[in-house]
Image (cartoon, rainbow over all chains, first blue to last red; front, side, top):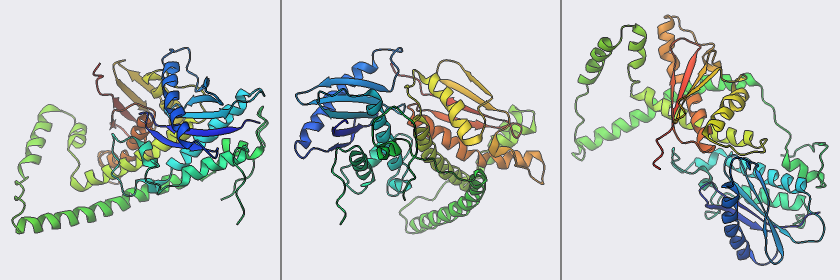
Length: 160
Length: 241
């Protein structure tokens, strides 16, 4: 089974929405990983009209992680850092994880209270509402943690 | 809220909990509920906009009395000027009714409805794009997605006619637009036409929001000449490149 180290979401304007790492150390490293992935994603997107798939596949590998990318039709970029392992990683599994992350993002964006105190107009980037700097809205973080738990990359929630 | 696990026969080896997260069971709502909600929404927002407007006017009056704000110029000239322009430029009474600008409170309601529509439209586009596995190749592709998938999802039928000049203007025509199907007025079809403009604000917002989420910024202009037919004109700003 795939072991995911980190999940990152980037807005259409290349602003980070959330970078969530499941490993116990090195949170900063995955910010860096997400950043480099953006360049590779742009390359892949620029390849042309014959490569219009959402799933970009394996982007590149670092010392201990393999990075996979996905761009939704709404131009949200999802980056997955998988632990490098000898076992074959099935595309279908990875696509399923990407779709789950997209679902989590969509559900968090559908929160009507996100716009309560902000004047949202035509030109604002909608995903900036979920900006994790404010730390008020934890829904997205919790949903991504749920995904992590469901695929076994995060230990199950302690029942308190 | 707990979700029932779906039994998707798929080729992944992920545990079923992950599969549930990937493809949650769709929640279902009676379609008529949305229609009723929109009717009541428009009425409620009329009242709310009137109250907000009144409050604003009172504050303005206070400021004017305190000498902090200059009194507004008299507005009586404007409607007269516009009316004469209308009667000389058009021969049918149709255009006269539609060309008259909405008054202040109606405009406020229209803006509120449009903003609600934009939020809903954006989220709807996100939801529907989940089932796609390819990105959009160009703006035309995006508009086609809007005309087929989004339209069918909200109003149970695709758009009847799509025209474009390939330079950023798209005209979407629907010959029996669902929100306008049941509008009728005891004062005749002209009155119904005039009143229906407000009910087009929410669909306009939906389209605008969906397009914005999918990457197309532009202005959306609704137009009706005979109920229930209606056209939406999508104008993209000229690219600066």
